[in-house]
Image 1: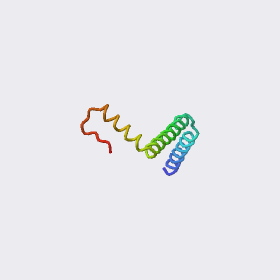
Image 2: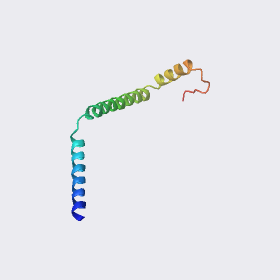
Image 3: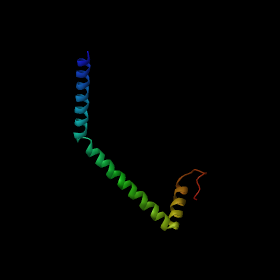
Image 4: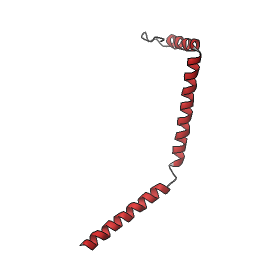
Length: 80
């Protein structure tokens, strides 16, 4: 009985080790992950640039806000 349990435990550990090794060696998801990192980096750069431009030029922010207010018919829109 103990030999059978030992054999089953050994087989289960071998299978688990094989699955972990094959998971770590797969490369099919790396391309998507790399593209996701690039898109994330570009998005952060764009947000930083827009915030920097808005902070550097308050009149540009005011003009943009007024243009948006003119386009939308929402009465609760205010330029802060």
